[in-house]
Image (cartoon, rainbow, N blue to C red; front, side, top):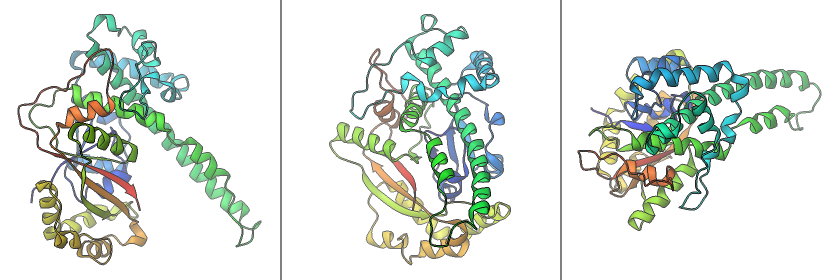
Length: 369
């Protein structure tokens, strides 16, 4: 059975919290790269690396740099060397300006991104406006990857501190008292802000929409950002007069308790659930409301789907998350993303034309239960 592929946005590097649930339903999981052939330098963890090696995850570069790749890589290398100078700048990049209204504010040409590019001989005067926007988008996404790496290291250190805290204070509080919240507050304060997520979305939308994908434009997308989905729904309503309709609400395993056994359990899930997965693929592909019988197969309470999950991925060991898929009316995917996130007042941005007729698309939200 051929399964539906899915594009993850605005992520550019696979993560376990996204791959573990989605690989049960989709294949391959597709990530858009700001720079072509760059995955070898990415720290994506054992499980995700294994998925890449077995072609369960793949990378595409909609806007490849070609002969300019070396020059851009020199810039990224410089940023890594001067890590302390650049690591915090992602939160201050002025091209992140995407307000809640439909018409974004004008971007400033004196942003940090333009300054970084200019310092390496990449200036707007030497390039068309569209090409400069792509240079900026690539840099933003690479800085975001660096930010994620820093946050992962910080999270690991905070986990260690939390463990020590529990040991030190366990004898100083009664069972009825609250745990000391210091590390939880510190960790919460380190999480990515709304402005940074909007910045990634703008950069990702430009890479995806302004690049060249040929005829194989994806038709299914998933994000972990509720705000991103809401913006897309608003844009869909502006274009068509209606909000997207819900296609399916699906419970999935949330995390991996035993990395060594994940591959064999995934194979067991595909084998034991072959009939259910085929029905699910049919629901997704036909882009219409599932019947009452179909909804019953995938319900949250004592359905064939939840029974299968419990047999292979027990909730106590694997947790649960929810994937909600929405059917967006017949709108070109790349123009939808560009209009929702990548708008620019200086020039009218149009997605590159494709040879095929784009059908309605599916966009999903992956969220905790």
